[in-house]
Figure 1 (tube, chains in turn orange, yellow):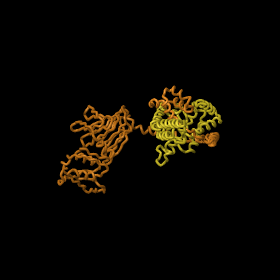
Figure 2: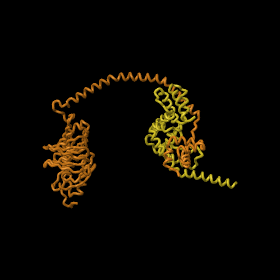
Figure 3: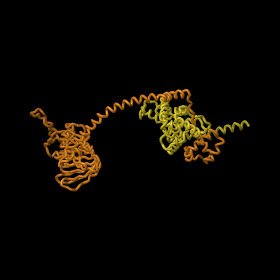
Figure 4: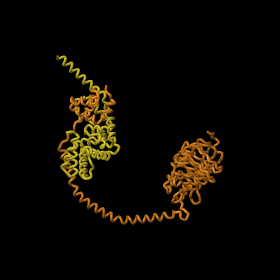
Length: 363
Length: 211
């Protein structure tokens, strides 16, 4: 019987290998000694010998001429450095000269730009209590991306605007939002970001979240992707913390806050990637969304239509396609009146009329 | 002369080279060229490139001889220099992902052929054949370990330096490799025993008949 576990361990032992290979050369004399030293059976010895014996390699022979030839090439290289070293000094001397000539203008331009930046930064200092503000506006039908002074990213949905100071104060980052935006805020516990909307403020330390606060909606929807935010409604000293994966609705009329878990995050953040997601929203809200998304005006001839709800996802579709798809599931008929040409030759905003289609039953 | 003694002599030659003795450099070159060449071809089968790379290694060593640190075994040191150089070149020539169109031979390093093995008494032809197949199926690093240990006869400590792992890892890798080889040649190992027994039996019968 061969104890394989023990043998495997021995075979990997350096001294065992050396001894065994010595025994291969002189089998009879070494064998007994070897078997005693490692206290193994004769069978195990033979087994090991067969494995390591098979791993005996033939030495590769190389012609001495090849080696000599190769070494001569080494000698050639070794004896050259003296000349190379001389060349090197002349080359490096030239580099020094060129560098010396270039250094002065470089220093001057650096100094100039340094001065310039200091001048540029100056008005941003809140010395007089007034801070210069930027306002970015995404026109209807257009989405835009803004980089804040601290490196935070903001995607601005169409019809929204964002106001922020040229330079943030050291202990607070205050910005104002109208409309909808998706934020990726750079973490800075020392300076929380305060996003002010018309009816509510949102305090942020560093996170990804979406805020929907269009003035005509009367509702502020905050959706947290990751991190932590707290909600501070108007005229309220209490702060409400929102967990990641939750969305909170604030009804400005009733001053109520309702939070619910998000099953499909893309429904709230997909717009920044060009996806228009409609999830259990009523038709009236959907039309408001479409108006902003496509920069059109949509009129409902029958207000009772606004109460239908539907689910849909659109990517890259035109307004005609979107409405024709919706008209498949709602009893509506869409009318695209001809655009009116104004006196100055330009066209007015596009109008779309939606009527109830009595011939269609509700599916 | 034992391996250890020859290493000590080689170290004294190395010291002479470090002091600027060109004859010592020539000795080292002709002593280690065959092993380096053999090792190099195992990584990249491009003889001219290997020859060039060995020359570069020796040129660099000569140029840096004043700042070279303590070297315990010149062979291991030279192999690790060449190894680094060749793996760099291999990337340069073939990129990280070798294209499918290149020959398999040029892709995989440290493969073995039957002609490289010695015919020893303890083994049979079948065992040798299945052993070679088993070795070539090992992961590349384990094949390299087999070469460094059983062809170059380097101790684990030196192999550890070459392969950039610690000594215990070398041992673990070796045990894994040998266990794999044992398991994949088990039948031939057994047959080896059987055929030896058969031979003894035949001889026994043969001689008995004569008597």
